Amino acid sequence: MITLYHYYFCSSSRYIRLLLEEHKITYETQLENYWKPQKEFLKLNPAGHLPIMVNEENFPIIGANSCLEYIKDLQLKPNLFVENYKDKAEINRLSHWFDIIFKKEVIEPIIYEKVFSRIVDNIIPNSENIRAALN
Image (cartoon, rainbow, N blue to C red):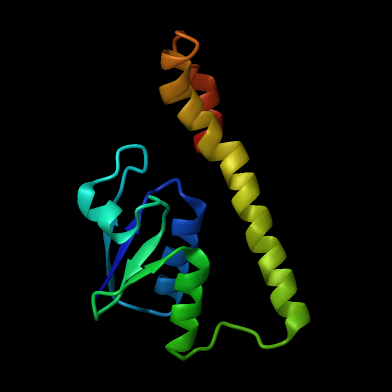
């Protein structure tokens, strides 16, 4: 069975979870707090980046693009991938846009309010900013 090392707010992890679900691939998740990585996780990827998918052969596939290619190579039905380079470029543009926007509007405000506001600025987190990011 495939194991996916992920974090809930990581847009790349969400992307791979979506692909696994759409292709009905059975997998289990391993939650990884990227700010405090476990030793086992760092053995798989010393850089500490998410997502990591460990396949049935216990081989780590690191990064969303590598995971995508692995899933494509399985050649499962229905085939959700396009062959036309123009369509691929548009899909990649939208995926990249989503990653950037998600990070800017969701991840960064939550991390700032819950972590950095206390440590760096020594202020109480603003719950309105957290609620807005969660929405």
